[in-house]
Image (tube, rainbow over all chains, first blue to last red; front, side, top):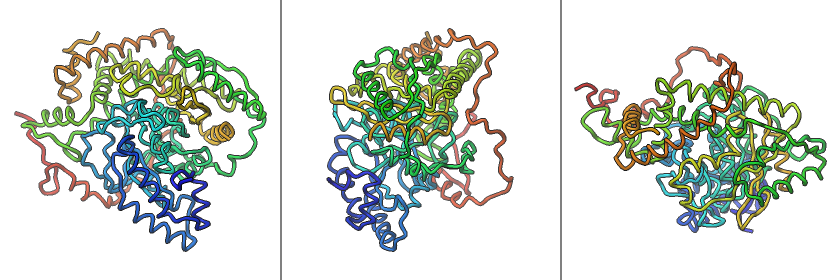
Length: 473
Length: 94
């Protein structure tokens, strides 16, 4: 086994036993990136020199016996997350030259432990997409089958982990952007509860839904990462003050007696692949054998989640992205007056999907349409949340497919944004309700990975991870 | 169906120049998306409160004290055009 193929847990053991150094591990990842990135396009920026330097520092730390859990572990970061002095484009040319002078809180926490940054992962521009085809740096290809999409928007992160270019990656999930690419690429990805992890330093998309979550090779690794990432941050006023559980310690405790709900609406979705349905049913049988109590539940407002999502998100997008004007940072187009500077800078620096979202948001928020669209969506959002609140009085977690199909072909949905939006059918509801949800790989259909989604109640990351751990074990 | 004129009006509000080719595609695709949104009209929301946030936290405040921003000069250095530490922009009024 090559070093870059290790999980965090395995690499930690090897580093601590001095079987290999952080430098060996980092070089193995950099070699893999050199060999594969041209084809897969999972990285926009590779920070090789810095990674090698950080690896040497990590080795000194391990030598002194002062290591933390992530010391010497190479990782990468979605490009829509700011890293100090590393180019962060967010997947859009308007920030082609942008180098942040500050660091997002979650990345700071991870790097303080001595994890080694390899570079920045390709993504749909500012998180707008579910196929990674909306990146202005080219699409990410699925490492399992290069003719397929990697998923999005954190497609580069999922592909990098799946192809062993790094041991883990940090992504961002507004409406499925961690879970869906994780499912398409056959890795594990967690969307935490809204407010569990700080979003300070994350390029904002839809502030009432955005979360930042890890992608890794096992639920065990995700538990380790959540331990480091979670908690209150005074720089993000939405972070919850609730105590962070000991995820790793509790992860392997028995799930006997855990109540698992199977929401029937998710299995009645139009276009759900029969083979995926059967794989998820097998997963549920497995949980039953492990002593879980299985029951069918109903979430009748499920089918409205996408419409709610695609009203709220563009609305918040259109105001969040107003900050990108080319004047204070980023790439500016010259023009004679201020209006034209804005209009030309944004015309050139945004891909069409970003423009579409801003225009939808501006339209639905404009006078005369606000009540019909935005307010209506916020009311239906209340009903979707009430659905979940009701079933979580009866069950501990919900198990569903993550996606209705396996990874689709590159270009297949590129000219039909609505069909791409509809592919979010299984991942939007938990997002709209602010709930934690995990995708873990549970099988293969026609050569492509299938993900099972485990949704938990608010701050229910632990039980979600426990079920994920047991499903893949 | 959203018209090309409406697309241009909204694009002006959003400060994005839209080419003719884009205008046609955006009108078509945005119309399809807005049509889809009509599904929400099936839902009776009489008496339902809108969700504005999901954490139920209120009034998250900090001490109102000035703190040094160690990198403020570095942020100014990223401005496209600077004079005396201020951002220079093209004229706003003709």
